[in-house]
Length: 237
Ligand code: TMP
Image (cartoon, helix red, strand yellow):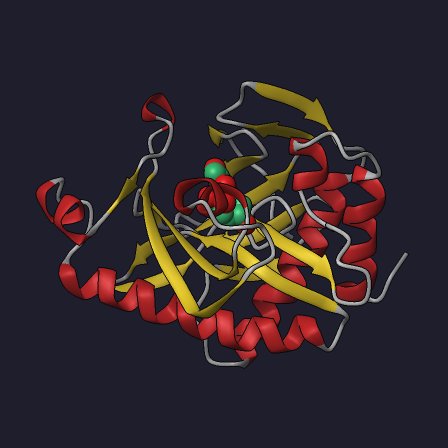
């Protein structure tokens, strides 16, 4: 039994609670959704339940594949027990197919396959709108060591390889995704979540978007998309 203690932090989609074990925290998944640095706000019915289940399944599977994550176990519909990390304030984005900000920045058509995956770094700073940064900025701001950046890049590419194949077997194309890492007992662990909030998933058969772009772009069928990803990954609903 793992009891929820005081609230440590509330983000846009999740709340972190302390437990009686200083090394463990509870990650609670909310239904709230934001986009464009919280300019757009809404609720996606049951998103917290789907995202907790999707993330728990993917973290447990990645652990089996040798990727070290903060995941301990799923506690309830909306709660996941995780190791307490000191989060590195860098969003690591990996991309296989042009979409979103990359389409805009480089003037490429959304849906264009990239000849090889791209990894990008963003400074996790809401007040600055999460600007893209490179290794020099990371060093000057002292956000992470060169070895940590190398490790995060390698792990992002490794997760990309494994997850792309896993999702393909479930009829989903992994277009791009965002990861966050944190320090734990002298090592780096994959943290945060892996869900349709922070990934782009397109149906392989129809190219239909099954992720948060349905909310960002007012495409409708938002909850149904999260439920469909849940069904394909967790085999439920
Ligand atoms: P982007 O195309 O908007 O840069 O997004 C790339 C990927 O990163 C996409 O799968 C969504 C995810 N993402 C987040 O998880 N949080 C964010 O704040 C942003 C901008 C993107």
